[in-house]
Image (tube, rainbow, N blue to C red; front, top):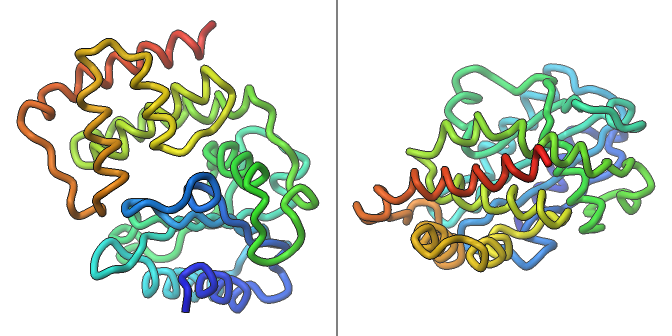
Length: 252
């Protein structure tokens, strides 16, 4: 069974009639999945899940998502409609699963409701992608997010993102390029498109790090991330250069 169909059946089976909509977003709808792309899914629910449903959904995702053996990582977000429509910032999410959380969730149990600034970006991408897997078009059950809140969410994510620079370099480099692009253009691009935009504007000495991260994203899976010692040494100056551009745009 196709992973997208499998995840949709899992969600609808766990949430039942509380499922208002299931929406694809991210690379799958804005350029096509790459070898290192997550399958990004947003779920809109009528009410918050109880503990039993949280456990069922987590177990189902742990069994389907992966980084090896041919499995594709899944990032799945569940929101309760009345908590995000009408829109307010910062938004609250009901459940978040990503492969980077696997060890934490396996040890600590299912995710709980929490403040999730990144929902500003997720909802914006889901509305733009307009790809329902179940339910009506997203515009019928989601409110648009003001651009200033997309900017606020992008900036709010920086400390957590930068903390992973040494262990998830490709993702950090590409995500920073996308944040820069979003603040400059108002558009949330795919990671490879954002890299192309940023490469055309970076000083020459800062381009190799981003170029390598883009090539890894386009052609290699997560487990195949390799950086030379020279590029590792250049990564921090590159990040500082992009952060300077983000800071300039965020405070203009």
